[in-house]
Length: 153
Image (spheres, rainbow, N blue to C red):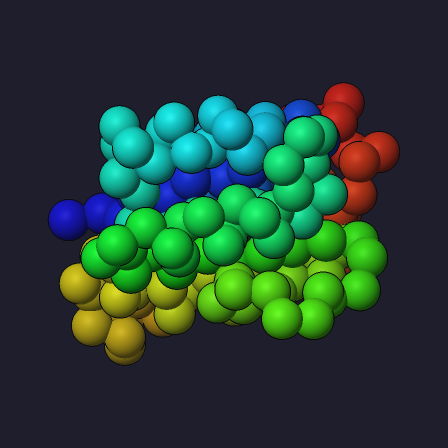
């Protein structure tokens, strides 16, 4: 069983990049450009993991995480990312600073993916490391991922 991941970001290049990385790791990937759309997807598709930018139009990612966590019985991990400092007292399960590199993103999400997919940790680590070689995003510069990469995605 593969993990279902919801990626939320209002920057199309980052949204597509994170989705491509997750798909290459074997995840079913859903995308939303704002928190309101993400909440609708949460109700209908029940993703296993949510990865959200903090700065979004309308409701921000911190409020999105709070609403997901306040849902009775929700154990969905919410991973937050931002180019700004990590906010205090957010209810996310993890924080990734932007800009990030591909390996940093994989290291950030992999513990949550192997839990969601019920894949033993050693198998998950092997799959993630082997996914670094054949992936379609390797044509991108390996160092830093930022919004200027949109022509490559």
